[in-house]
Image (tube, rainbow, N blue to C red):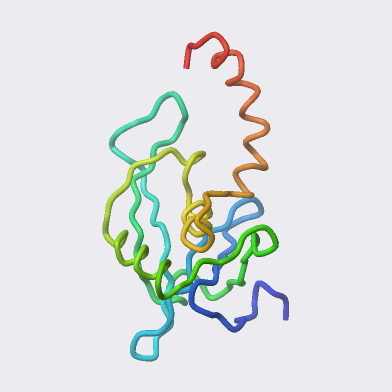
Length: 152
């Protein structure tokens, strides 16, 4: 059984990755159990009514708490920055931050904020998305001249 099909042991504050397709995954933070049901905090994404034409697709989002298996049966622990950053204390820092964000609506551009950004921000206190960085290097050259000419 591969890593995508297994259910690894989770600890509160772990980043949970749900593979969506060949290029992108959906990320959440394992929140722990309530009444014996494991929960994950994750960033929902829907198209926004407002548009950010300079940077592409505007999304309306909120942090939501859902049962772990509701997001998918296949997931893995993806604490990808543990070698570079220390994980923040779950009970004193991460959990209160998640609780504070629950239900709050945020509008953002997908390139500058996504579920991976939110998960790394909660766990490590830094905003980093490895999947967006892989495609950003192809997008940035198109913007470079516009930035230099101060058209953006």
